[in-house]
Length: 340
Image 1: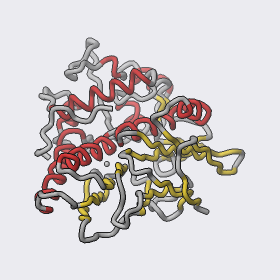
Image 2 (image 1 turned 90 degrees about the horizontal axis):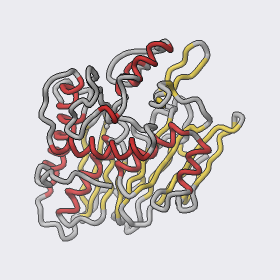
Image 3 (image 1 turned 60 degrees about the horizontal axis):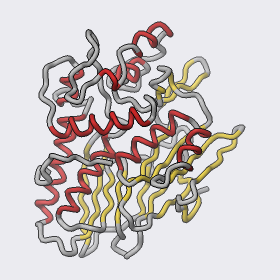
Image 4 (image 1 turned 45 degrees about the vertical axis):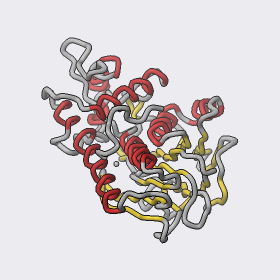
């Protein structure tokens, strides 16, 4: 998967995981703060790195600021917000790159992953505007305005009278992790864990062990990452993204029915199946982010078949089986211990 091609490294958002890694050590530095609606942390080895830690911290902060002012739908002054409002904008390299990446996901998944379905997320109350329970007629009319096939590579609308509304929440946090990791690579860093709501990890922690990441149990009300774990995954040292998507933190109930935040753009409705969460390991955090969402759209059986067909992905699916929570893991998904 491509990470931003034209952005200078010098320019240099849902917390599904509890991270078991290193504490600050003489040859490891820790950067942490607030970004994309939550906290973030970046742990990296300073061995062989000549750049001053303060300059690295400033560079990481500048990446987060650039993403916020470009891709955030909650920042009303961002390029994305102004574009969605119908203003004439000049897309920067970051926006063009993530749009191209999302077009690839749209085409690969047959429209199941569609960042140009912003109005659907808004209509159901899971986007940038308030909404809930749209009528069937409203869903049909909104769907007619959606689709990456209506957006040009330069973000110009391709259908007359249709101005697509974009929502990059399915990839933005993972994509941001990749940008930070790319910057750290440019400094010669090989051991890192970048946690910006989603995770990219590579190499080992300060104790010399491959990074471990906890997978939360997808039970309603489990709002604190790491408080109730289903299991712990351990990496191999190879750089990868690991991301969980689930319906246990963002949903609402009406008339005794649960409506999840995962919308199937192909139908216009929240999904209704047994899959509770999907944890994906992929070469990049953006890909892991996107495919975790995709698995939550297509459901258990299709997600199992999809993951089994991909040598470049591993997955851990937690699902409901007649009221009992069960797990399925692909062959290479390395669970080293179980939760309770």
